[in-house]
Structures are given as C-alpha cells and as structure tokens.
Image: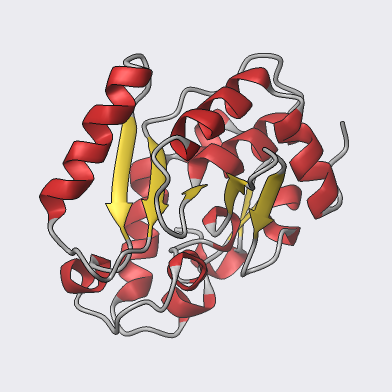
Amino acid sequence: MDCKTEEDIMKLIKEDVWMMDILKTAKMLHLPDWWICAGFVRSKIWDNLHGFEERTRLEDIDVIYFDPTNLDESVEKKYEEILKDLRMDMPWSVKNEARMHLKNNIQPYQSCVDAISKFPETATALGVKLNEMDEIILTAPCGIDDAINGIIKPSPQFLNSRGAIEIFEARLLQKNWKQKWHMLQIEEIYQK
C-alpha cells in the first residue's frame, strides 16, 4: 500500500490485526488523553515504505496519557503491570506526559498532542488511539510528510532548543535506523 495521506496511515493500521489488538488492549486502561505513539506508528509506516512483509521488532510500545492530578511515577508502573498481565509478550512503556517536563527540565506540556509535537524527530511525532467505536484517531502535529517519505530530521522543538540538537544526533547514532530501513534519508545538514 502506498501511504500518502493520514487516511492511508489509519487504513494501514486498521488492517493490521496485531496493531489493532495492541490499541484495544491499551484502550482498556481508560487513561485520560491516551495515545500509543512514536515507533509504534513510525515503524509501521517505514516498514510499509520498504515493502517489508514482516514487522520490524519494537524496543517498546509507548503508551502515553495526560493526568496532571497524579504525577507519581509509580502509577505509570502499575499501568505497565496491568498491560503486561493482559499481553505479557509486549514491551509496554507507560508515561504520564503531565510529569515529563520535570524529567526533561522544560516547560510543562498542555496535553499529549503538545508533548508529541515536541518529540525529537518529525517522523516520530505521531500518535494513534481508538475512539469509543474503536475507530482509529491519528495525531501528527509535525505532519506526516517526513514519516511517509522516510526523512529523518529534528522537530521544530529540537531544532530551536539549546542543547537539544545533540540529543537528536545521539539518537541517530543509538537508533541506527538506516541499518533497518536503508531508504531513509537523514536531512543533509545533520549527517555526520
């Protein structure tokens, strides 16, 4: 399938039984302003771009939510345990974006979509969830063009924040995405 629009991405996910099962499992937590984001969505798009029949293994499944009334990290761990009880074969990671500014020493986020907009790469700034009728909702605050075209570049937040570009560059080395997805293009000024 050739992904060109947000609707194409949502169709790609809807037709993936495994992804829909993961989304339905996360939905069972009834978290406020929840999303599954980052590599869960981006890797599906890049696998599709490369024509992979088999999915690329995910390091984790990032479930995020926004609850400013309880910033206790142990609550996130409890949610991870619930998810592991439901699907123990999945590498769940649960984070309350209402507290992540404390960890990252930045201004507080206003919502999960605000947090996603400030992810390191534009192609990673994606999230999906299910509505009440189990229809897919996609958020792409930095747009989808970089993800569907296999372009890796820093998000505006990382491009314009002091010291953030070093984090972006370290992620490029650590993640080594081009080894998995050979057609990816790193924006030229960031190639080392």
